[in-house]
Image (tube, rainbow, N blue to C red):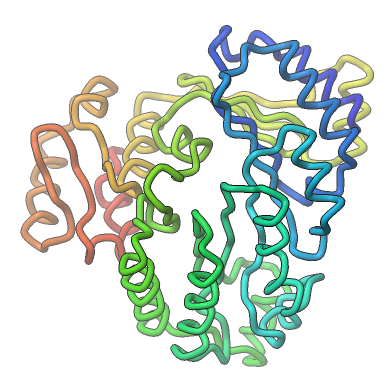
Length: 342
């Protein structure tokens, strides 16, 4: 697999048209299972294939049970300078219910170990809207994170996807997820508590201390180009999107045989407009009106909807930007879908 990843990097070296690389992100699955030698081999090949910024953000997604003093030092030597830790919760019952490999003790200890190893840019993931999850439970999770003094928090509401074990349990009433009112209350508590601690909400689900926004995700939200390597990875160059074969064995076979391992979709003007709107509205900087108009000048109906939502208090509009208000952030997906062009 490592050989195939490196081969794909070489074969797609022209995709970003010699742009300087600002971020490298090891994610999707469990990249922390890679040895330091494997990580180093990939990073070295990226450095020889692309022009890398001297201040590049190099992130690694890790699980608490993967973290040890030796592992942390190896990651640091490999060039990793940012960790994204999948904590999810500090409650043992939540972790067992989510079938997480780590326990509450590992969740509590991992950040301290990472800081001791010298990592100064750490993000943690939290999930809210869990079943049998009280407001008090959520507040305890938030306060525990704040005691760590970390730089970044990503928080996501539990979603029930179709055709999953969770959806089956919900249908059988074995599990009752938090209702929308509880989810909204937990979200508002999160925003309030992090704001008091000086951690700003710069995207609906992402919060950071000043200067610690995720460069990688921020570039994605700004519509910048990116290259995805490996099974299921997606790439975007402004006018088209491509996605790799998901199956590991098939991906490796196609790479080794020099066959096509990805599909490509040319984006229509409508696609580009709607995607910019969708991702831009989720951020604190909002959607750049000039950039939106450069893709397609919206119809009269679009501006009428903007005015209606402005009157509802959901959005804030200036000559330069369209941003969501505090109440609008609770309705982000609805607002975006209403503003999409046909």
